Amino acid sequence: MNDSLQAYTDGHADGLAGHHDLERVADPETGADYRIGVADGSVAAFQTELLAQVRRLLGEAS
Picture 1 (cartoon, rainbow, N blue to C red):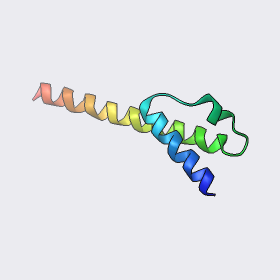
Picture 2 (tube, rainbow, N blue to C red; picture 1 turned 60 degrees about the vertical axis):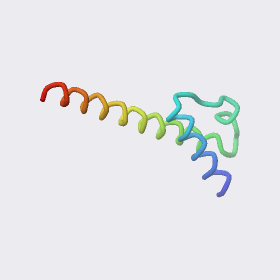
Picture 3 (tube, rainbow, N blue to C red; picture 1 turned 90 degrees about the vertical axis):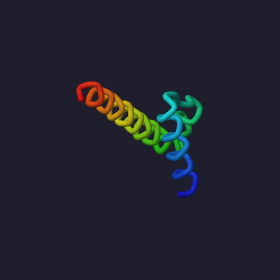
């Protein structure tokens, strides 16, 4: 369980950074957890950027 949580956490950090580790993805025991973390991190990065863009647009429109 600890390995799975660590793989997810590492994947989330990598997803936020915009990259992933192909060796971690291929790991038969924790690869799925890592991939889910990457996907969640990528979504979080997208949401952060989207909110920043909206704030810029609203700031410029005011």
